Length: 75
Image (tube, helix red, strand yellow):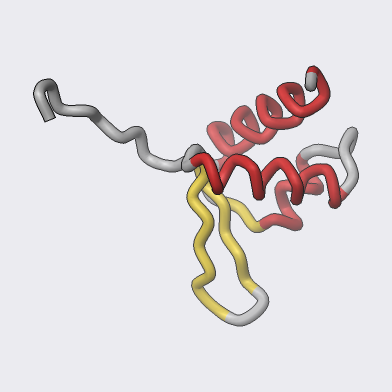
């Protein structure tokens, strides 16, 4: 599980630095990991809601950190 935490932290760090990027750009920013490892981690992070995944056009997928959700007291 240490490997999963490491890649997830690296993804968060890179997206905090660059803002929005494509999956292929993110893979290029993480040369220590394979495309499959990055894709698997991105899948996990988008499912848990910490990454935002957009599909603005054909063959274009953009990733960014999801906005923080505030929890209202008493809600």
